[in-house]
Length: 470
Image (cartoon, rainbow, N blue to C red; front, side, top):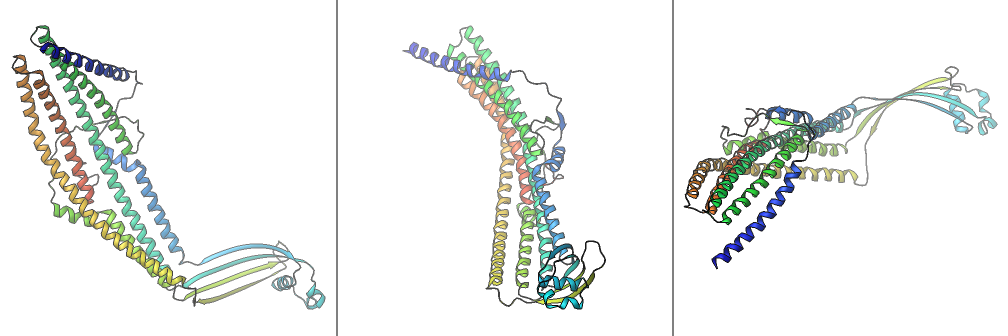
């Protein structure tokens, strides 16, 4: 019975090994395909990556364009305080009695003969070339224009705050992507080391099997583990290439750009934040909260504009006109006219009251959204703070686990050589060693990115932040 079980185990392990080796062979052939020669990767620090991103990232260009639009709105709002001047040149011809009578008067060519009834009723067609200069000036509009300019300024401030928040988000994406490349590089080294260890275990198993000290199942198990480690190595290489592409995208450069981070993933000493201080800082510095405050102020100006519509308006106007029977100046006359107009809307079917109600409702909405945003910022700060605290503690645990796992692997290797333990125990110790190293580097990565995320939540993340500068 023992022989049958042993044969079944051998058959299963052989089948699994053939499948895994076939998959590894296909992936290896794909990896071995000839690649195009590439230039030497340029060394890149995290600070350099952040500066490039703040210059080339398209998201910042979008936010910057919004600020230019807001600045143009200010100039447009300011323009209503200045008079408007117009010029027109009109050529007309006809025999309409009123037109002929008025044109002759404007041309200052009217005579007593033009008062004949037949000529008044059926005049001869005439032409008129009219040159006009005109101007209007809003002298008073119940301060609607002032409120409009103030609203434009507040929206310009809101666009500026949004640009600041976009820059902070870009910095965080670069930090996360940069450390992602560093983590992927460490994971590749861990995979390479794990493959070497698995190769060593497989060689020992082969030697012990050739010496008759272990059964064939031990050797097959070691080969299966080796095949698995080769698969992990292939995935680690591809993950590194993907991480580099993500970094290029975050920087706003072509995805196939080649950069080599000049820094290495390692523990750094960063200032220990205090939750209450970080939360207070977030409520003061967060650009998106400032943007909502500016939007609220702008909406208050919109309410004031709606109220101004109920007040009077005073406009001044003036014009000068020259009329000639031919296109060439001369032989005609000119005139001018000026005045002041006072307007007051008595009834418009309730449209102005409806507009005022609408603007007030929008003001209430913005106020409520400000409270929602404030609560969300508080929660975001706490989440980022606790994530950082967890990452710091996990890093301490992972650091201690590495030495323990390596010592356990050494002991199991010695015991396996002496025939005191099984291949399963040895491979378990090897897996624990690989896992402890991978967990450590992931903890280092999470610690740095969590710190950057906390600074993003507090509104303090910038190129001079401790997590960015060396």
